[in-house]
Image 1 (tube, helix red, strand yellow):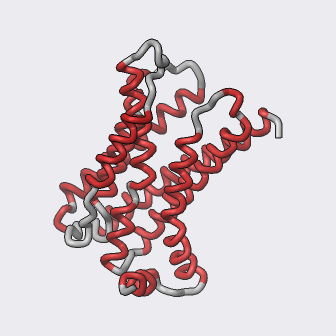
Image 2 (image 1 turned 120 degrees about the vertical axis):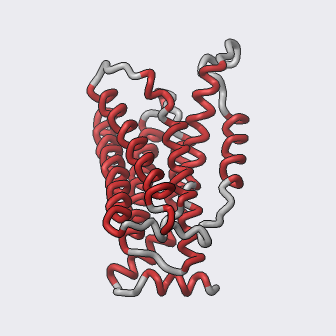
Length: 244
């Protein structure tokens, strides 16, 4: 495959991933708005996603509109941060009384601290080893941590579903869309890794994190498949798994 062909193919997966990601946020906001409740949702998972977006898009203030793609990237960053802020606000303040705190008991410090330490250890200054740049290193740490944290941010939500033994339809669709988004981006980074290696594109970490994150959704995909195509309830399947 030529570089030109790989470029257009990877962009298809990227834009598809962005659409699925936005759709997942819309589905979640719609669920909360229609039911006036955040039951079944993990506030800890949403907090982790908020951290991911802030860490990853901290360079939003360095916006240079020198191309249509850069404008698109900045727009997506604003949308993701805005949607996530709205979700966190509605869950933490507007409908906090409906929050299932007793099921959302995953210790997120077990995710945050290791991700931070690993990011500090494996991040190099963007200016190179001979000329250390603290700013470059800080940007590298925040970006690396965002990748690592995103790969495991869904864990509190999945654990909550297992503990509660049930999942609402809209919550299940939200998780499904998140998984499909990550799968699309994993293919995107795989194409970059294979066909743009000579350009030294740093894709190994995003690809590895994408694979890990996608694997976390595999079991949920199987349950969702049985629910949609075999008319087996998600609540029943989750309840059976929690009894094992």
